[in-house]
Amino acid sequence: YAKLPKIPGLPKGSPVISPYVMTNPDRPFSEGIRALRTALDFSVCSKGQKVIMVTGIAQGVGKSLITVNLAASFAMIHKKTLLVEADIRRGSLRSRRAKGLSDVLLRGTSVPEALYSNHECLDVLGAGMRCPNPGDLLSSDVFASFMKEMRSQYDVIVIDTPPVAQCSDALLIEHCADFSLCVLKYATHREED
Figure 1 (spheres, helix red, strand yellow):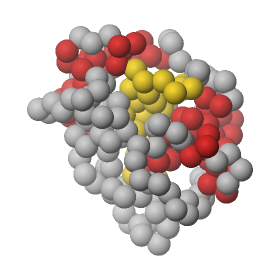
Figure 2: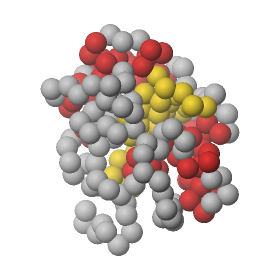
Figure 3: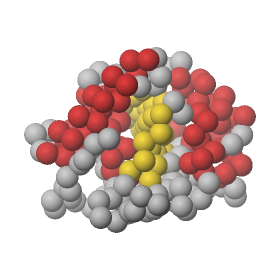
Figure 4: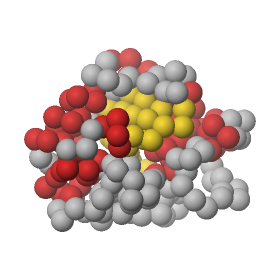
């Protein structure tokens, strides 16, 4: 559980290029991300678990912003980190023209060819090209094998998933994760949601 303040005047654009926690390390949002990272590091990563899935109930709650900054925060303490954008339907972290997860799983693109890196300890695998049925792809043995391979190469893997109210993709990915983090927006979601 963590409370993160809004970021005043957040610029538009992809948060992957320059994560807020890296460019504004002294701001309250960055401190909140570090507190969340520390809690996850002690409760999840210290037990040998390394895959953290981040989801939300609905769009627009800041899920991807938190995911990117959480991954960047782990990289800043020299943990080799992979950020996977598993929202193949609406991915926004990388350009749709860039190779990504769907290309690795469907088209045989090598993982290094599809990665983007802006920090020595942070690799980003965008969503890649749209595909006909992302749910089938994410519940496949190919995705499970991919995750098994990535576990052997990274200290921490943070997966950005679609909101659970939008589609079942997050639920399909959950079996490959060690921990699920749900992002809620204050005064927007009710306990019943």
